[in-house]
Length: 176
Picture 1 (cartoon, rainbow, N blue to C red):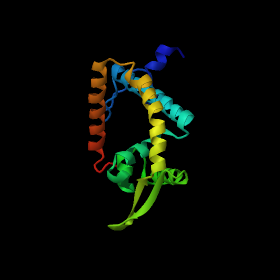
Picture 2: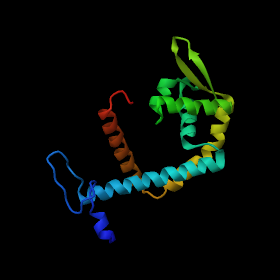
Picture 3: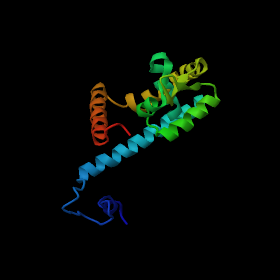
């Protein structure tokens, strides 16, 4: 199969255009944009995760939990709030927080106003680990995302990312 023919396949695997009354297929330009976006996201997140694993010994998701807690009042959030603020499901978040507890970076406590809820709190050791990891992380974000773009493109990226997030949240009220 030649490369040109492969690029014209749609989602059902049929060459050429497919039109149905229920599906609005992507145009060639939209398909190229979609695939370029996927590749860029995968490349970016792989580079960021690899840097954090190599230099700080933690995956990007754990780093993001530490960041969210560091920015919260009292460096603490209800687990449900932390799940909403992060990209983790509640069960995956619980597992991640357990790993961070093992390192002494987070502690969990029962919510004083609701016995069913739990609060995750960033410890001083967790804050120190985050502070140590942050310079390398920021340098990688600059190398992988900010530096290849012009200032105008960074502004466009902000607008595009905000629009995508808003559209995703509108389709899923409540965040989960």
